Length: 67
Image 1 (cartoon, rainbow, N blue to C red):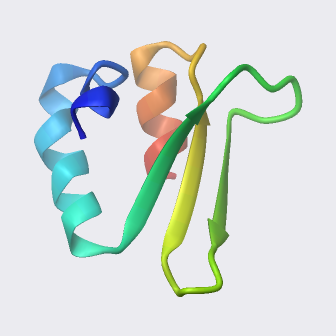
Image 2: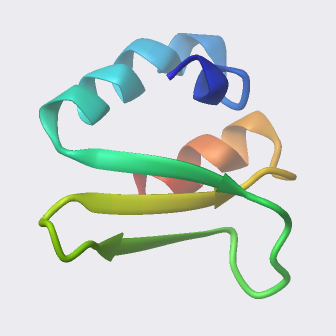
């Protein structure tokens, strides 16, 4: 989780950590994509994968992650 903390506003970190602990979610940070800020999918093992672009500011990263 430490890697993701660098991309989030400080006050949002406990909330995001709680969400990640409550659900089986894997987060990957991707290089810039022109067509989307992030992506969500359910993997074949039942876990969830969220990808978020690395070039987003902290607040857009947060909104993209939790929406």
